[in-house]
Length: 321
Image 1 (cartoon, rainbow, N blue to C red):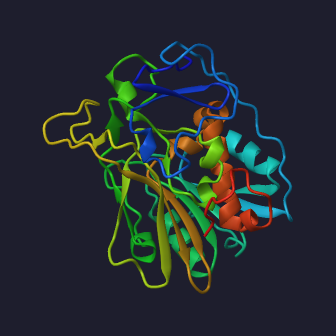
Image 2 (cartoon, rainbow, N blue to C red):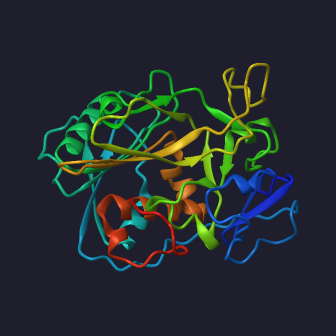
């Protein structure tokens, strides 16, 4: 079933075929206020139905050199086939590494990608990522808000904690099934200007989608030598869905929740991006939601340092740390 627009106070069109609902608090975004999408609008005015068509893989971007990306396989997790295609167009040499099996350790310059499959133990994968960061490596860690989920040893290194209560939003969400479960497909454009959100800020601002996402909390004080920035937040109409019924009940306060964060470590220079949702890396989202492809591209550029070598894809002034 193709998603259709949810009619809210303001309908925000993200990319040529992406139609999402946002609430009246668009001005909270840390991007350029009032910016409108630069892509062609979907059919109809705000509130009209607009189907989402599959998005092609992005055109190849110039790469300074071949780059390694290792997708960590945990159990029978999704193979992330379309993400692999996206990365290959960006000049990455993509391989898979079965966690727990025999083999050589990851090359120091490789980017590790851990997408929580939602079942089975991921502690060995988290330990591998922790060692990689300690050696100055880079990693993208995407967890699912399932029972017992945590960042394990990465909590202390990154100063972040995974909150497993999923968030929902009765106003800013994608309408897909036409019932209350749609509230769990959270839409947001609240991003902090940073290299990992370069395509989302300024004049080319887009809306991001996260399905049944958890949230992140910052552990204070932050670890010594770590620069930590929350880069993506939900709209302030989101709430922690404690009873998981996709409806805001008594005691479920509306507020903005951290969904993604970046951490830059001092010597030896490790970098990490953490998201409280892994579904955005899956084939369904990467194939059909262009803004999430762009997010993946920006994240990988920052993790490899390529953002400092290529022209920005957003308006001037976007921060890059």
